[in-house]
Image 1 (cartoon, helix red, strand yellow):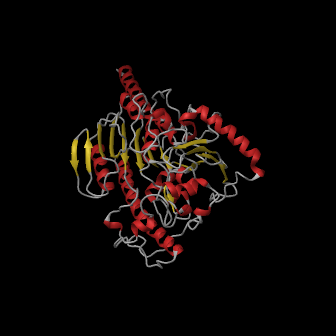
Image 2: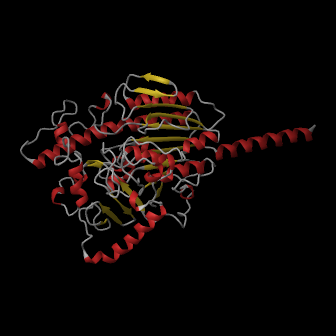
Length: 495
C-alpha cells in the first residue's frame, strides 16, 4: 500500500513538474503597442521630462524588468513599423513601405506561429494595415487611425460601437477577454492604443493635468532649420507640415492648426508678431495635450497589471510596452516622426518577465523592432521562421552578453519623403539622401544632432568605415539598390 501511495505521489509530482515546465515554456504574453510614444515622455527613461510626464505603471515594467535604451525602428511611420513588429522583417521584405500598406502573403507573422503552437490569441485597438489580422482567435480593430472617442470596431466578432474614451474602451475589451479565457492555455493579448497620436485626444479627467505649468523645452526647439547644414532637415520642411511654425509643404504648421483651440487645451497668451513666442506657446500646447494623453495609456496599463496581479499571473506573463516609433517633442522645432534622427528613430521598449529577467536591468545594445517577433517566439519555445530577419533578444533578457554576431549598427529606410536611408551605430548617424550629399552626425559630441559634419575632413576615415558598414548592412538585410529610397520611381503615400 505504501509503495502504491509513493507511486501516486511520484506521478503527481511528475505531472506537476511537467505542468510547471510547460508553463515556463509557454508564458502568457501581453504586448501593449501604442502610437507615437516618445521615450523622452516615459519617466523611467530619466529625461528632462521625467518630473512632468510621470508614468508610474509603465515605469513598473522597467523597475521589475528591463529597459532598452538604444532600441530603434527601421522605418519611422505607423504601418511599416507595425508590419516589421509582426513579421520580424524589414519593410522591403514584408512589402509595407508606407502608410496603409499590406503585408506580403509570404511573410511570417508571430501571432500565427503562436496560435498554431496552442496559444489563445486576441487583438484589440489600432491596426492600420491593409490586410486583415492573421493569427488571432478574436480581433476587433478600428479603421485607419480610429477615433479618440466612441470608437467603432470591426473584426471577428462583428461590428461594435462603444461609447467612451478609446484607450479606456480598448482596455475594457481586453480585460473582458482575459476574464473569459481558457485557463488551461497560454494567451497572447495584443492591446494597441491609438494614443498618443496627434492630435493627442485625452479623457476629460485629465483636463487639469499640469494646468498652467511651464514644461521644460528641448535644447533644439528654436533651431533655425531653414538655415541648417542638414539637407535632411531642410527637405523635411518641404515635404511635410510637421514644424511648430515653419513649413513649405502642404497644410498648416502646428501653430496654425492649433492657435484657435478652445479650453481646456487652448493656446497660451502670446505675441502673435513674434515667431519665437509663437514656437514657445505651440510647444507648450503640444506637450500639455501629449502628457494628458499618455496619462490614459499609463492608467490603463495599470489596470492590466493589476488584473495580472489579482489573478496570480504576473510571474508567468511577459508584458511589453512599446511604441511603433519615436516622436518629435519639439526637437529641431518638429513634431511627428519619419526621419533617421534620434527622437524619431529611437523608440521605447520595456519588458517584464519575472521568471527570466532580473529586475531593474538596462540594455544598451542596438536592438530593433524586427527583433520583437523572434524574441516572443523564442520565449514561447516556438521555432523562429528563417524568413525573419530580426534576432532573438532572449540571451540578453537572461542577463547574458549580446551574441557575438549581434548587429553593430541599425539599418534605416524611409520612402515617403524626404527619401533617405542609412545606419545608426553606438556613436554615429550616417545617411544618404536623394539628390544630396551624404550626412553624418557625431552624437558623442553633438547629442542633439545640430551639426552635419560630413564635410569635415577630420571625419574622412570615419565616413569610409561607415560607408563600408552601410554596404554590409544593405547586403545583410538583402535589399537591392533599386529598392532603396530615392531609387524607386513611385513614392509611397506620405500621410
